[in-house]
Length: 611
Ligand code: GCB
Image (cartoon, rainbow, N blue to C red):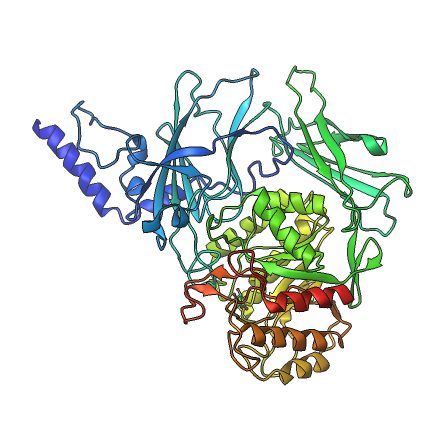
């Protein structure tokens, strides 16, 4: 090695190990809700399957730029490298590494995924996108040695336009760094009551669209009480450019709808009326979905016209006083909360698991699920649309996150926007929740009221809520955030964390909220199969008795418009290690095996039957 080369190699080596600020480089391209989020009904090509996988606990891929896959230095001399992407073992994607490999059961750090794929364009001028449905928590994406973006947020989808980087004449090498470190500035932060699973744990797809494409469309029944006004908003790519003028056609053949929408500067909207009698409204007893499509008209310049389709239900959700109305009829939300957690799959889910969850809800005579505490898989709301289940969807603004930090806000607002853009064509979703059990401070009020405003801006047709804490000093339902909400969510654990059950009646009788209240959580732990009697904490008998008392109390307060007890299934939780818990939160009505029902399940089943 001559002197110049030696200096070069040493410089690089020293630069890598001394660069404490390396992460800044990967924040320069952020993948966020301004990308293509609404891909429902589009043709996708799967990139699921076996990917090469390796842990990277010191984040060396990003520090030392392994993704460039450079073996030779400038002088053409082979360097010793510390990576071996093609030699590493393979793991299936989607997957949660904590359940895929025994030795990674507790691993909460960075890992690398690599696969190759071929890409042959099908149309001239087409654009190619990669879509990641979920990577926990931060993901940096590299294609053919080039950094193409970083996404924050472990439960929402992101896409990246790879048209400029993808190769058409050779294998494309795709590397993803998935960083699952817990961090006090993230959303959620480093302390939660569930396990922080890591991985490329949801589907990865390739999507092709024409050069000008439909970036987003939102079709819904206008909540004006007529049950006949439909509004559709469309945004096409290049919305910020003056050349985004054109026309789109929205069609709902079964309703005889074929409406032309004028697009100016990349966006447009159409409002039209259908015959009241003609429209069959979506509701749990009649989850009617219509085929809806949107087509761009060619712009005369010969651009291939984009087309997207979906199955959409039309329904109206509103509140008046202390009540919630679905399609004008007062409704009681008979629900339960559920985590995305599975003994064998971790945070990965499948349509079968989603359908099984809905079957259990229905067996309990329920009509509503709180998808806690972060956005669940995209397919959940789609299946709930088909099955006639109402949903509360939520972002992980959980406990005391860094409410004073600007970047934390940016991240939270972006996750909210990605969730809403992903699911706002789903009739099943009736509530967007902006947080859970947050302290009533000034910083939190600013943070969460801004989120509530953002949610309304993106979707004027759904109810906004948050799971609030009770004012303990006044024993009253009181939270300054309520002013910004449509439905006040309340979490209470009387008879469990606070053994003085009578406080619940005191609270409910001193409160007279001007809005509907949903009891978003209540409950207690029980080890399935353990019968210790009504006084034994963690016994099924205690849990059953607690549920009976809770139900009897709720019946007396008409402002309670719904319930989502905590929780349908026991779930993994690294804060719970007594002899009954063994690493699980045991407040489930069903064991973590998803089969064994506890006595309290049948209490809720009877309670909901009676309502
Ligand atoms: C809560 C939290 C939930 C916990 C639950 C519990 O209030 O919202 O995430 O898991 O209590 O079991 O303590």
